[in-house]
Image (cartoon, rainbow, N blue to C red; front, side):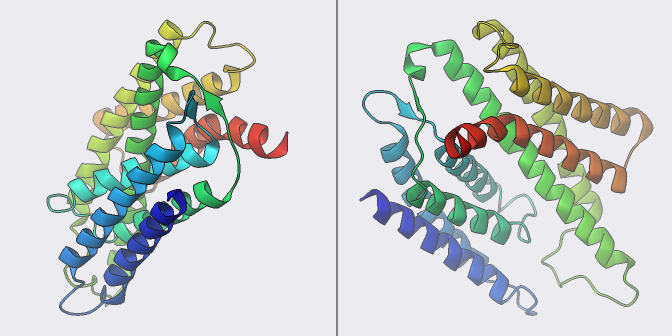
Length: 263
C-alpha cells in the first residue's frame, strides 16, 4: 500500500507539472485549475504515504529520505495554498517535480533512522520550527530564482515575457523579502529552541548543525538588514539567499547523508 501511495503521488505530481509546462508558452496559458487539482490529489496520496512510513511502532522513522519527502510535501502544500493569490506558476513544475522525486526516493532507497520524539515534547517543537524555517527559506530561494529569471528576460532586447505566466518583477521581489523575513524569524526561534530543549547544542551530535545553522542565520540576518537599511536588491540578494539555503541544507541533511549512506 505504501508503494501504491508513493507511485500515485509521483504520477499525479508529474502529470500536474506536464500540464503546466505543456502550454506554458501558449497564448491561452496552461490549464492551472487542472494542474492544481492533480497536484492536490498527489499531495493527499503523498501525506498518506508519509504517515505510514514515518509513524511506526515504536518511534518515528526520520531517515534522510523521509525527512526530504516531508519537506517536499510541506513546500508543495504551501505553494498550492497560495497559488491563487501569489504568483508562483513558473515555480510549480519545479516544486511538483522535486516532490515526485522525493516521494520515490523515500520508497525505493532503503534507509532508516528511528527516533522517539514523542518522549521529548521540546524536541517536537524544535524539529517543527526547524522544518518550517527551512521550507520557508527554500520557497524564498525559489522566488529568488524566479526573480533572477524575470530580470534576465527583461534584459533581453525584444524578448517579451511569456504572456501572463510571469508576474511583475516588483511583486516577486516583495514576496521574496516577506518570505526571507518570515524564514529568518523562524530560523532564529528554532535555534533558540534548540538551546532551550536540547542538552548540548555543541555536542558531537549537534555541533555541525549548530555551526552551519548559525552561519546561515548570520547570512539571512545580514541580508534582511541590508535590504531594510540599504535597499539591497538584484544579484546580491539572490546570491546571499542561495548561500544561506545551501548552508541550511548542509546543516539539516549533511550528517544524515553521511550517517545513513556512508557509514
